[in-house]
Length: 146
Image: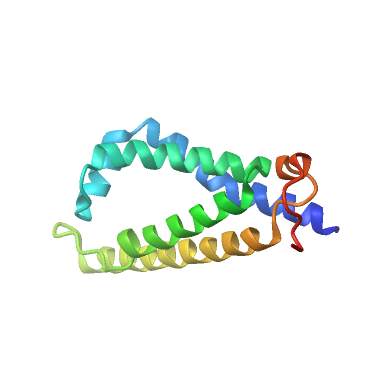
């Protein structure tokens, strides 16, 4: 496969989770705000709307290869932030049995590692660029090797 095909596939795979998550947030702002509030962040409803917009817009930017390096840097930072803020600790729900909390803690750790891996993928994309099949290439953006 050529590097342009691989970059296109990478953009599709990396963007899909953010487009889907961003759109999903619009259907459940209260639930997202509750999760944001649970970690102590201020203005949870505003942050829920902002995160939905951010994930959708940057996901679409990665998908079509528009301002790819900037979108990739922003999503790398977002992934690292959410890994630390939402997935770094144990889960202890008082009404749950210890085994269930243990399973949830394991899943939370996997989510943290997934977010960090996504951050790494976005950092690679920020260096490689979007490839020839992108809006950036049509706009004459800086080539990947620059």
